[in-house]
Image 1 (tube, rainbow, N blue to C red):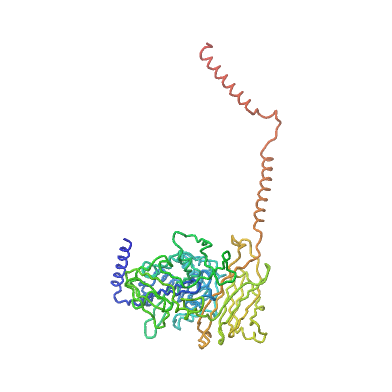
Image 2: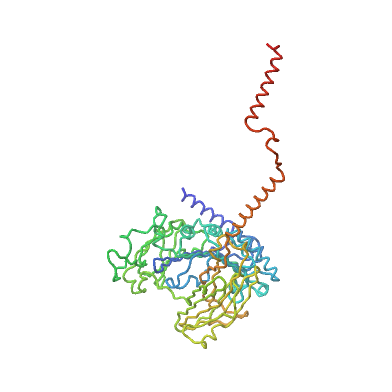
Length: 610
């Protein structure tokens, strides 16, 4: 019955689209899922949905593929380009290699938002930014309305427009950037994300997106990018691209449904590394998970793909798998497999109404010669252009420092990038302490590392600190970027309920520039790779919140005792014991006895003393 309803829904959807817009091209919407096994039993799944809408349709409010709810927000807020990120977890660059999409679809932990708004003045841009954040907060069930002036910055060197904007509007465009590192991404954000898709997650690769699997991933990022695209010789379109990237643990994803709580396996089932010299019957060194596991879509995602979306481009294969050509893959009946000439990937054409299941078998012995040890059966991860680590230094509750370790793995090419940090106002930077040094070199080699600095100091309770540094790391070198800061003391009403946990500091954004390209009119270069560091947890001087409670209790007790005594003195009247009225059970009995005698006397008189 459920399959029948699905077929009816897809048929009606395709008929309605073809009848209302018979002249529309089917290539206006693309969707594709790319699966890539990673070392240590990890699987990278990249979902990409892209649709194009002409500006004539957009201005005429003809929302065929572009979601109406989002279009009205962009029109009302005067937004020319929008980028929104929801991210959780940490990308392990040491094991997994370079980031997907060269980091362009990645965000820091929490929620990131940056947009180009058309406005004549900064005040008008701030007003439109407030409208945009509040509207997106309600649309995506997120706390974007908390992106106020203290969490908003105006980057100068880090971000460049991805769309094609006419020269008449570039002069009036304002870039604003906001981040919420403490935001917890959950299913409430995934549901409105799926509602923006043309098929609403009911058909195609979006049917695999389940909150239980997505938020059980080791790392995940949801991205929405809206930009104008003007191809040469064609009509300009407004493009919306939705991307979901997640790294799943194959071993954990294959856990059976009847065991929802992960429990450690028994001792005799633990995989042990028998090559260790201290291995024995009572000593087990855990072995790393290998990539030669067999897995299927239903095991990893809990379900199969329900056909294809009828609006997608039929020439674009919906599912691609990046594994060596020698590995055997079993697919459902009716699915056409196409192996690429590079012998490292293959794609699958799925029938419109058929369920797609895929089973990947363990690798053969021939794969060991194509891959590195420890990564048998998977492609060799691509080495990223830069490794970055950031942490706090110092001790105490008054002052501290930030240290960022930047390592260039290339043996013959230097890396030039822009390092940007958005810090809260209560972290006051000592800019004169900022220093960049190469590990193992003297001061003469460190003079040319920092090339340009853009610094906007913070104002207490008004705006945060914005720091952008354009610097370079020589080939095969490690650079330490450090600076000191001072911690402010907050008012007791400004602390959150979990004040002792600390305050989240947003991740640093590193934009690697293209060294071979010339500078544009704005003086910047295009970005070739983007990465985020991990977010930090800053511990501020926290008062003892039990003292206000003790003061309130002591004051209330003192007031109650004083008020009670004064009330007794003013209202009560002190008399001798014999002057007061008779009280007690005896007086009450006497009054009742007197009334009873009176009633008997009146009754005797009426009866004539008989």
